[in-house]
Amino acid sequence: MSDNNTTNKNSLINVELPDFVNCAGENLTKQVTTNAGQTFGDIWFLVFGGISQLAEKRKLKYAAELDRFRKELEEKIEQIPQEKRVEANMQTVGPALENSKYCMETEEIRQAFANLISRSLHQDYSKYIHPSFADMLKQMSPIDAQNLTIFKGQKSYPICDIHYTKKGSQGYSVIFNNLFLANTVQTNYDLQTQSISSLIRFGLVDIPEFSSLANQTLYDEFETNAMYLSMKMGIPEEVGTVTLKKKKIDITPLGEMFIKACL
Image (cartoon, rainbow, N blue to C red; front, side):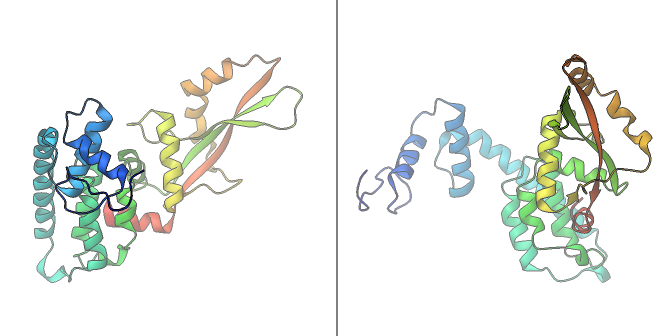
């Protein structure tokens, strides 16, 4: 490894950089031959400016999305009655603008940022704004936003684990965690369970232990779910059984605030 005085001669930025950054800079000045290299080059542009000609199309698309975001934001702010407008809180608006630049191409998240910023200027919504929301949004996927939006209609939904019990055993193993069916737009259950885990980590939803919904008919659709039936039929009765563990998922008070602020 070279010493600390090594300077990246190919860099457009006149600073001393570690070797691994030097290599990245050299790669960006050459023909990039892999998707991973191109993606990194594009991200480099978004953060540090245009030093990769290969990012031209991405730059144009980003510029268009940024302009759309600005117009959406201006429209939302214009809709706030003058008597309801409050001064911008830089602890919210500053991080929200900074974090939003990484999410321009994701419709659900871009709209959520526009809502967060505009509603922070609205007297009726400002009480729901929390400084952590901008950072949460930056880390969210479109599925996260979709799942949270569902809770606009009600506070609790059914959710299930799928258990396997070996014949003759008293214990069980969880073969699928947090099967969530309320989001009918997204039927990739692996992505769904990842999303639920992420929303729990943010403190926006909660799955209380040893608790399910009183109306047991709400779990009927789980009994006929194709993935569950496939697992159930795949295990012979003489080997073991596959069953549903019925639970519920609730929106938290912080989650309710997030929905009012961003969705």
